[in-house]
Image (cartoon, rainbow, N blue to C red; front, top):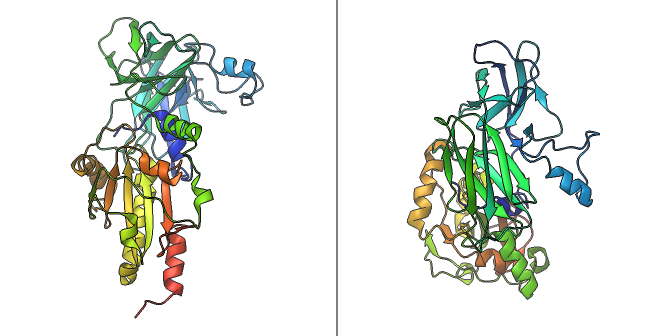
Length: 406
């Protein structure tokens, strides 16, 4: 399910869609290799290999100050849980931590950061107490170069992720973040299998395909050498920046009341891929932009639209809902590719229920660019083909307040 780049997700998912507040409390204890409780161990679901997320006063860094930026990404290799508050174990080794529904694992390290351990969390919301057993940590280090041979970007960022679990398609696999002004990375981790995702300061080159490393049988630290950046993947943030520089980008909010622009469909199911928005004149239309890397889209947005369609079945001839899957990386070539990836979501998230409305694929990002849309979510088009404010909630009220034409 790892399709969109991290930079793309930050731009698209954090735009108009609110990340679900669903959370769960995880309790457990941290023990050493002999089973004895470890006091003062730090526990977190996401770690930084650049030291704390806050300054010496416990306050967030001011990202307008150059010295704070350097401090945030300094301390290369220093492992600390991300966030303002650090969860630590008591004398009995026990802890309690609230995590997002997307949290897939917890990692704990002793106060010296020389031993650590991982605990994978159950897929369901109710979770039994977990035990994290600490053992010696391994250092994984390396450097980033490219896209040109020998090129050292002025800033690089690396995520260490867990391998994907197809039974948890919405889970976050990210475990550690490491930034550097020297194009280097260094993280300390328990023995396991990991995936490395790195990118440069311009966010237009990535270590793709993402290299994997298996430390489960390693006897010492691992030096991955220089990981080469590939310019083949262009993130949404880069495409939007280029469109704005070219003067072709007009924000969606400024288009309200105007005729909707045309879309660009690579493939479609439920409608013809050659269909035009003007073909739906006389009906309300909801276009819902989504992507496989957007957990809120898959957990909340699309299911809520399914519910809307079912609840308004009596007015089905007065509106259409079309979900547009955006794949700016161009890895999806057809609806067959989309459906194959959706199978995991249908089975493990939607309880076997498929979407009751058409789905289209745009592998070019041109549709979001045409609509001036920088975030996933819904766009409403009125029966005259004009862009309107609101979403399915406003449309539900409109359908209820107006009668069908005879």
